Image 1 (cartoon, rainbow, N blue to C red):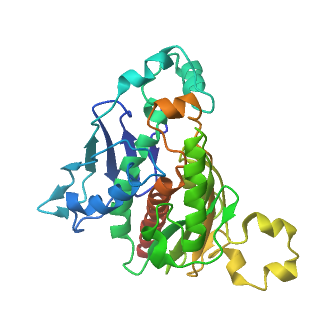
Image 2 (cartoon, rainbow, N blue to C red; image 1 turned 180 degrees about the vertical axis):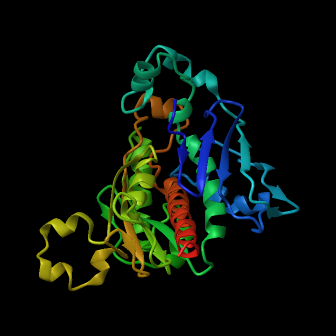
Image 3 (cartoon, rainbow, N blue to C red; image 1 turned 90 degrees about the vertical axis):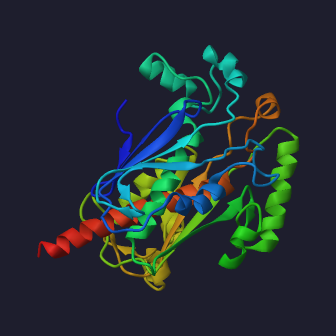
Length: 332
């Protein structure tokens, strides 16, 4: 099974299964001289973890990271950084029936067809549990970027309920991580109602990057928008991604499109302009519903927990492109 690595200069390789001993990430290409310690990961890992509120699964994951290499006396050495998180509290017996059965909307059947053998416990490599180490890598990526860069995600829509205002100060003050408190309350009620009926719901996540470096991205196949789309779509629950005006541009006239530079989403010709980068990412409703949802420990909506994952993937792309740009400047 190939394709477990991502990036060019800053390259990550993730490994492990959801019910195996541990999950881990090897981060290659990180510059030396960056301060890094295990506690740096705590806040972001907590944001991704389950059991945060009634709108997520009650499953408990400690997610205690352990740095194995690439850091000496709290500073990166320029060597590969390896970090693992041990799996604890799994209930593998809950998945015994899936050894010979396939869940609708999951990767079970295609994994079995492609590889002829699969780890049926919790989805193995297809499990959302894999994203825990992406979040770890994202913390490192943020340290590589200029300090002024701010990457912020929020739930702009849950089901048919849309945010109408944007106040980043309230994102971490509600269980759905919405920047509109009024909409957040309606979103929470919708999720809890569906949870009570063994159903689930999807949504939209908006990622905003303030003060991004200029000139990130390369023609023709290395466009920043292409790299970001690749990163977002690599997350299992994601079904679509757009930037700037997005799909609304299909209904615009040219005079409308060029009138507001926000329509460009901070990217022109596949290269960052220095203006805010704005992405919209659609997330599917969890496929574990009905009796499966009531018996197991499943999220009725994974949008709140996906937000830190998408922020991390955004940071990885930007940091990778930033290092590529630094190398380009040095060679000219």
